[in-house]
Image (tube, rainbow, N blue to C red; front, top):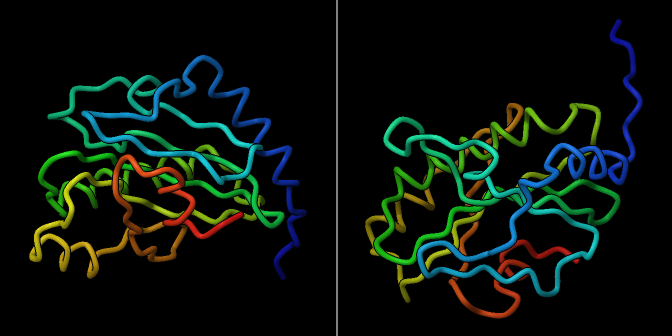
Length: 167
């Protein structure tokens, strides 16, 4: 018989993450000319600059650009994000977002109700058909669940909130 594990309050978990992030918080939400807007998202949030937190040679390890942590509907929401202004390679995006979900899984205790939503923020008006089809067929794994990749365009006010559909 398994023991029931008490759920941790999402606000407590967010505060723990905020303390861990410390100075590695994102101060810019733009990468290579692609900007993500945090408008219309819950104010109780923190954004991890993954490159600052985990400096690495990009040729060695793919990682996403940013991870947003916020509280919505009494749940911790974690959003690994990859920002792409130019051409989108679906295989690279999947690898980068998978690494982001791995970071989320390590940072967030298992007894915190967590909704993980991987997002590609892209600049082109349309992702090439072949790459778009690959993205739609792809998913990333988070604690045994297969998560679809959400997409939104760079530079629009409230672009991330629309992709997440959270308040």
